[in-house]
Length: 392
Image (cartoon, rainbow, N blue to C red; front, side, top):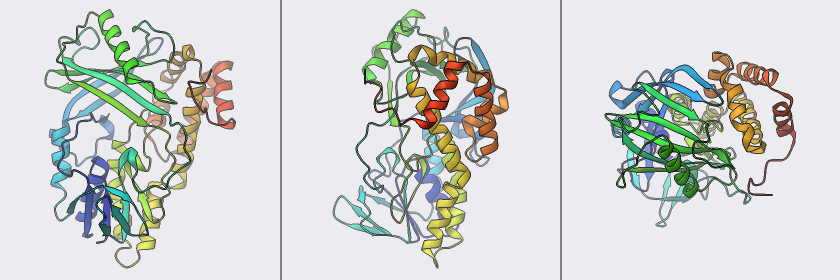
């Protein structure tokens, strides 16, 4: 086998399909290759891949934000029809060998050990196992910074006090839940048809804010807006780290959220994974089967060119600044961010390899900020990471 992709989520499926289309002998390993996806996936409409069928988009909506005041972003947000999206990626797996099993490690280069004691071999092994990262080396125990969220799905009429038709509320930082303490925001997006997701979100915290707290705040916030949540409504629970170290598994390539491609300021990674999948497949195909070492090196350089490494470091500084910020200052920080020119906001939220543009965006934010925020940004670049937001 030329390539074995571990993990059958969006990133793993996209990469496995791209490799197979280039003629590589490709395998895809997942504990449940046929299991339906339950997460909600979205991205800015301008990020949608050109080859993604329109049928995979459940809804598009104009994005807006409420920090201290309201801001219209000028960009549309696209929410994917998850079953159609999965079916599209699965349909591109022609020729890919599907393996049902759970990876537990890589004892040597090109080998994946499974929980049942068996092994699979390939010239290049890819860890696309999401937050689990089954092929990543063990790291010293530490408390991760996590994004957590709790949401409910209601009909469009019930959500009308918060969004109108054709709108998405990307962030609402008003404390309508009536609580002090760690700041959370409301995220409201149409899911297509007559459904709307209302989600109370903690952008990042170390450790993650408990889902019970988010559930309580969401119901209090919705009650304040006159929205009654039916007892039998569907819910969504979200919890994932936003500060995992880069994947350094010996002889393996980290891809997708396992890389990690997660943007620390948004939690998004699907758009980056879809965009990079054909590029990584091309890098592998240029060297396989004759030179697996060169193939792995080229693929790593595609996922993590120097510019992307620099920007990843910039974004981690921004994450630590947020974690150090007094809770009452957070809405003001986002007020400042969303008043930046469109090009700066777009670059910071989406670009992976535009160092000059990202530096210009951060510099613009710094110049427009007051002394207190400036101190947060500067000190977060030089101080050790915040060990815990639970510390007194």
